[in-house]
Length: 101
Image (tube, rainbow, N blue to C red; front, top):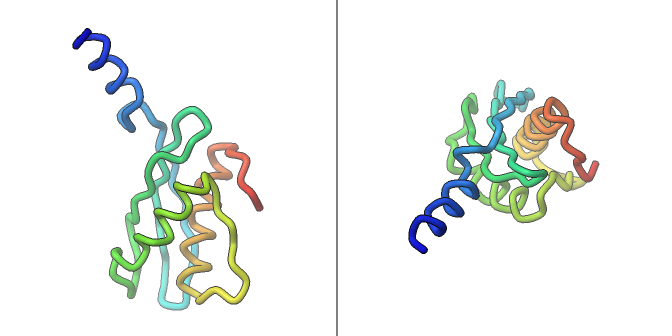
């Protein structure tokens, strides 16, 4: 029973997800992200580079994108939000991931 449980946990972990990178320009510079995708699900997003912005400001956006399993671009979003969303969209495009936009 424990072996089966361990196998299920290992197979459902992000270890087996594929990573894709994307980048975009914001008002202060480049934003670069890594998006982990497993079985048509966004599992994780990491901010690799964010010129002029602390990485923690993207936490809420990351949670929403993972929850919605895609980027739902907001009209009237700030330049940094648009830059982050575009970087994620670019990563999803490189994965041929069917995004909402």
